[in-house]
Length: 237
Ligand code: FPP
Image 1: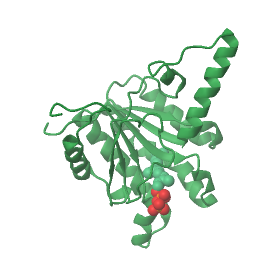
Image 2: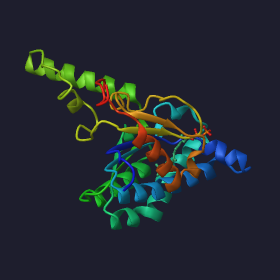
Image 3: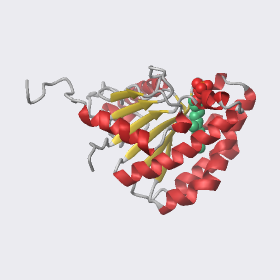
Image 4: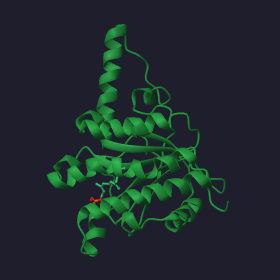
């Protein structure tokens, strides 16, 4: 393989609405095409050896969207897993989620749980959907758990960079190596705030439904050339 492969890739999938608008189509079509892009990209990511792919599918702030758009997004997991769950099973991909699912309609929660259960023994790519997720909320929840544990044990528990992630949603996931955001905006939008501390960032102009293997390869070529020093010096200094 000619590129450096990130262990953990995180994607802010932006531009579904603009993709649809440019084609004179309803926003829901953009979201459906966006979900197809997740499927294609995760099969490719799995093939080239990426181990963790976290995708931002519904932020804690997306509740502000119009009711009809939210209702479509709540139906999309069923459409998506009816179409593609077998592909994930056949390709050893494990479906996971982060975020508070309890606020979603019960049918959607069941579909997600079933996809997670049916792929729970898979050992390939971990495909993690961030749903009703916010990075600040995750950090606050970690603080709350830590404080509760301190009270229960009646002492100030030592915190370190090694044990702090135990209070986060996926302690077993490594830090993010690369964040890609589509559709031209250059912001993080409350995604994985702790986990991106040393991540490389790539912003591309294309809308998410147009993101494909070729574009991922282009991002990996850029990532391969980046000099990741983690605050230290490289060999030439
Ligand atoms: C951003 O585009 C996209 C979202 C808010 C939703 C992303 C969801 C998916 C790609 C599908 C998720 C699939 C499953 C199976 C859970 P936007 O609507 O903000 O686009 P715009 O900025 O152009 O309006």
